[in-house]
Length: 294
Image (cartoon, rainbow, N blue to C red; front, side, top):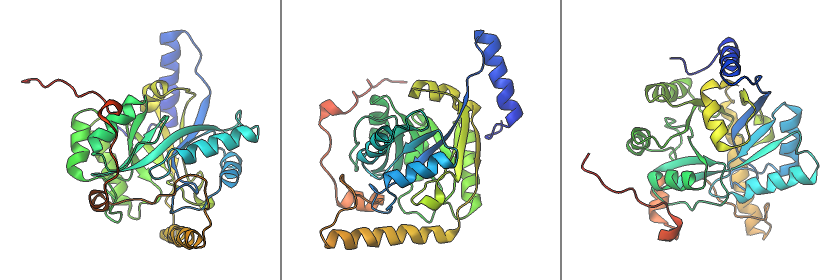
């Protein structure tokens, strides 16, 4: 099995779908599933600038996945509507959640998932909202916030992962992207590419070419047909992230906020355990599955 579908394989799949359904293949869309804007503490990318670059560079769909908040994605969606560009750019509400086990991305969300839950609890809450679970940069050793191997394998073993970033543009060494691709292949999980953009320079460095979709369910069904393209960022791009962090700290000290919503940076599992946040009530969490002897 190959993780990356070729253009020929994608066309063949679409033709097979046409023969099975009697319907012609749908238009293709170009998606980036992992983007940060100014609602992440390590980014200062404003909504309007991001939207302009995304459209100019050919993206049709974007998942805005700021650290620990959905409000930033809502801000981009609302700005697109305000500019009258909804026919050019579709915004998917997402969040990169700092779980107690490392980072997990949820897309097609409708409200913020608090940090500090376990990876399993977070995945269940994403699915409860009707969203999809994506694992970002799972084997990048240079990010202390990446998900730990034990919880990652548990999520895969229990079928809680909908997609894996098999290419993250910010991963410094390609072998760690390859390790992610091998993991996804082993568990038969669809792979995606992600720019993990925090600055305008990185917008559209990765895209996923897919038949058109509108819902999480439709996207999940189409992910096996994904044809992704991406290139690696320069290691110096991480300097923009450090600059954004310090600029936001300085602006906060001056009493100036760069965003109207919460500005939270990535959290390592160790920090999350030391600084727990208020957990959702039992009614807000998915119901526990009944235990069996199997």
